[in-house]
Length: 302
Ligand code: SF4
Image 1: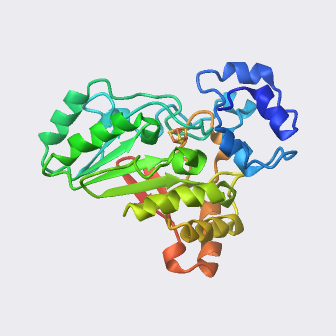
Image 2 (image 1 turned 90 degrees about the horizontal axis):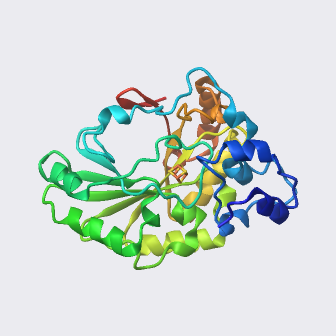
């Protein structure tokens, strides 16, 4: 794991040192798995993978409209670490540990996690309308395999819970962690991976994704539209094609949630729609992710 700017600079043959900024961002520090760093092109300060993980000076700017809880999760948390925002689904902040610190993360300031699992299971048991439980975080695939198994087993015995959805960046940024035994469930599992650029999909990632497909896990991808990273139709077309080759269905393309520290990644809706139209001209419908923005109370399709 790379947590040191100097080490990343050496690896990429770049002078990334901006120590004063780096020190001020220690509540959300640099964190990059070695296998992800290996996919970053050396000698390129604008590499799209590097930009996703490199702490920047612009993160310290205060920009109107960009806050610490951009999707109003705190208002929908009846139990610490459980978010009940939409009908039929609850989201569990199963851990606050991630494999990578993505600079655009909308939860970068909250980093909450479940403290009382008993209360969480009771809440789910008491509401028969909940038929899907979403494991998120942090990254649920960073839990110890036994802990993850225990959670999945306890959810599977609740009669009205029909499926478990896992949101994870691990298969993309740390594919070496994926084994045939990591996700074992007695009820159907949907996995939503987070990948923003086709360069993230190395042969090791393809292998990990195929392994998960073989276990009858349905895999979707969601991306965030990020300035300088993937804000061109060409880049997003390449991503959809590569995902599909790896057995993954492109699912959502999100407008960036307006989180404090990430304004430099923002692509406005007008431009996003132009990019999307370009994609539509060249991609089959099933390769088109849905362009969405989170507005209060729902996801709005654009
Ligand atoms: S892995 Fe997910 S939760 Fe963790 S920093 Fe990245 S976007 Fe945020």
